Amino acid sequence: MTLLLHPKIEVRDSGIEGKGLFAKVPFIKGERFKAASGEHSWVTMTDAEFQEYIKTVDSYDAVYLGNGRHRVSTV
Image 1: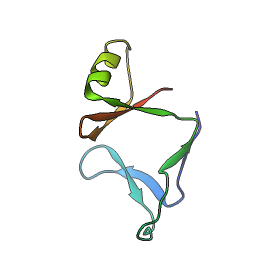
Image 2: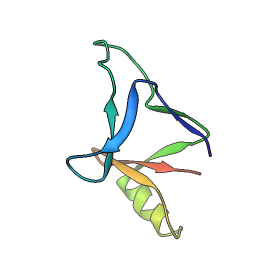
Image 3: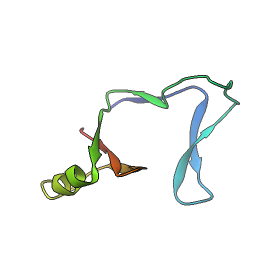
Image 4: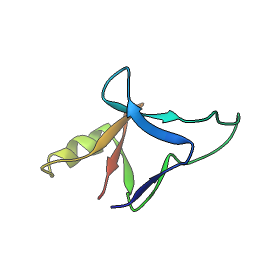
């Protein structure tokens, strides 16, 4: 799998927990960007959809987005 980070972003240790994404240089107010691009694909699920999904797989990669939504890897 190939995953390319935006050139202004880096992964490093987080003061909160584990690793995190951090800006290497300031972004211009209103600038739009994708944190990463490549072969990795994601699906957004509701809480109910996510709870049903995790019953069907042995492992998964997901991020809670807030407001009852989850971003789940489909790779």
